[in-house]
Image (cartoon, rainbow, N blue to C red; front, side):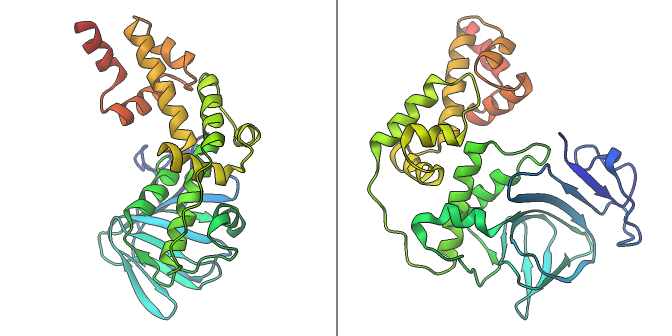
Length: 298
């Protein structure tokens, strides 16, 4: 299912907005090219990409966290009585029910991606950090770890988010918000190595199919967010990435034995060869086709 796009013109590039779902917004902004891309729904999370010129949004407020990243231009908004500015790469964090407006701070326009996160989803992920919602007074922050977590949630607006990946993303976002809320450092808890190893064994035994969070909860005896924290503590990565890398490892072994790329992708649980190629290149910096050629050549 592709993302829905709201555009102020026809003929928007295909990689930005979907012309099929275009809705005329000229009466709202009057600037060709302005538009909002709306991603498929994820439980408790809305995601968008906006391309705007001038002052676009009048003062308003959400009952969710609004967390995003500025991609191009300068994002400017009024928040808690002050003018705020966000440059490309900066993270924006707006607390639920805080009034703000928004728009482009320069004539070149503005491009940003934003997720709207229901507070109850965040509370579940906070668990060990505290019972209340973290309030981040500074709405624009520079934080590479938080930027990576937010970026993973927003990197692909044409599709949903894998369940195991979302567990880890929410934990890292919760920890980032807690950190910027000025709370004391989270005390490291005791690592539950046995629970993590039980979960990792289960993942390795089920590489060819999607694995759900409830399955890992049953296997490990931990709730999904505690497991995500424990898994990273013990093995240095998330259950989602652990499963992904084991799939890619098996696929490489199959290709080295002379099996086709399509067959390796199918047998290791990838949706299709394009999906497989994208993840392979992200993991190893080279396409599986190129890698296969080098293996044969050696």
